[in-house]
Length: 78
Image 1 (cartoon, rainbow, N blue to C red):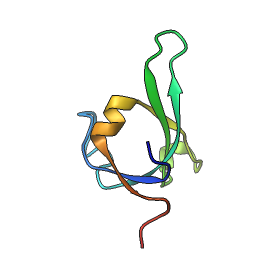
Image 2 (image 1 turned 120 degrees about the vertical axis):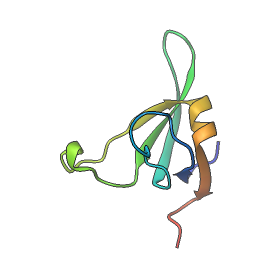
Image 3 (image 1 turned 45 degrees about the vertical axis):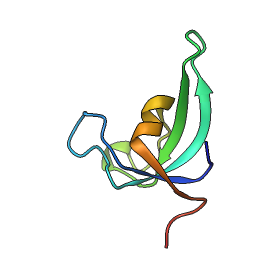
Image 4 (image 1 turned 60 degrees about the vertical axis):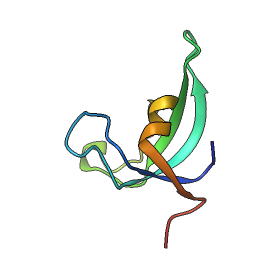
């Protein structure tokens, strides 16, 4: 998995649009303590009002991340 910025290219089927086209920072890989399932911790590169003006770390199973996101580069696109 490459470190850097990713763009969401597919939805999860939850909600409207689900952030498609938005940018996200890959933070790290993680593993569920009980099941061993691999996941991705990431940070949406935007602030939403419902987050009370803070940055929020998020989690997805690794297979979902690999299906729903494409690598953009080490930094924000021009």
